[in-house]
Image (cartoon, rainbow, N blue to C red):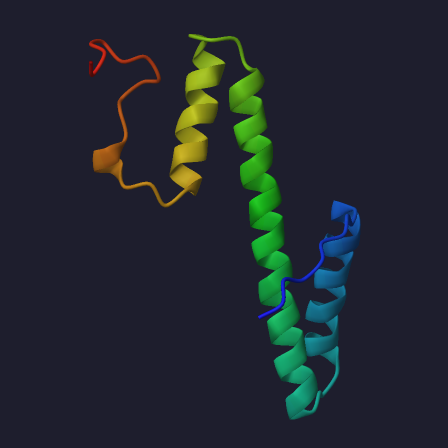
Length: 100
């Protein structure tokens, strides 16, 4: 399968497109193809917006001062957004004993 090219789009464009799709579904009777297309586009846009949000929280975590409560809060929020199982996480960013 050939890799698709990526382009930059403003977040506002994505959110407005998603709102348009929802309005179309709400106020118009769409044929089967249009319903499927709207559903597929909604899923893709929602996944992209989630990825943007995850990246934003990760950036906030990385740029926060080390050891600060804000950094720990961003870390917890980011780990909550990812699929990293709780048993693989430490309670804090700082480990008491190095593994080596």
